[in-house]
Image (tube, rainbow over all chains, first blue to last red; front, side):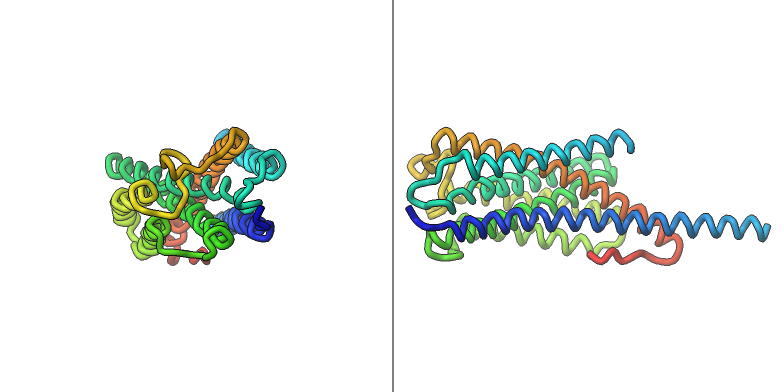
Amino acid sequence: MAQTLNYFIAGYAVILGLLGAYCLYLYLLSRKLKKTRASLQKESQESSAKGKIAG
Amino acid sequence: MSSKNKLLALLSVLAFLLVLFAFIRMLFFTPVEQTMGLVQKVFYFHMSAAWVGMLAFLAAAVFGLLYLSRKDLKWDTLTAASVEVGLLFTVICIISGMIWARPIWNTWWTWDPRLTTVTIMAFTYIAFILLRRGVDNPTRRARFSAVYAVIGFISVPLTFFSARLLRTIHPVVFGGGEADMNLNAQMLTTLFISLGAFTVLYAALLLHRARLMAQQEELNQKLAADDGSYDWGE
């Protein structure tokens, strides 16, 4: 039987590594979107409060 | 948490457990192939990645057709998400195939018909992602993406049948006649479990990516209404 353990490990490292990296990318993007949405909401609340004071 | 989010979370957990189960089964409960040794076990996830890649491009073409007939931007989001996820699985398939080929064919790469057509397929969809980014108008972008996804799908059957119709050294698992890989019952069971696990994983990743794309688009529109679009750093 051919000794191919190193290639077997390399193969699964690539497969699981790429899948993990993509999941991490999705998680980080989701966090970034949440932060942006929160800051947008805060900004719009502040501007509407300013509008009320000015009015 | 809304019911849609709950379902997506459930699907993600299911996908993770299925992939883990397939991995454990491949590792401990599937015999080692006598000639190739342990590297043959890369084949289970390699073929599953190839299957899901092609399935994703088929789904993208179907979503593209649905966009063209209904003009609903949600189909465009699904088209783009499916292409991105499909490309991920195709890249996994190509790299794991190269690692398998090194000890078996004694080379990382050869311009065999199957390898050539899968490379053409991958570049077709890399071009999809790059070109899509160049179109700002959402409606024009959606129309372009839908037409591209439908036409680009030609590369998928070309890849699938290349190993069956042309002279190739790439093994054929099913329907290859003499060129069939000889898999015993345990090996076949592991293969089918891996195929199922990767299909569920594809569905989970597709829905996650589509949800994030829709949120990105929504925020981009809000930001554009304020003072210009936002760079998401992709």
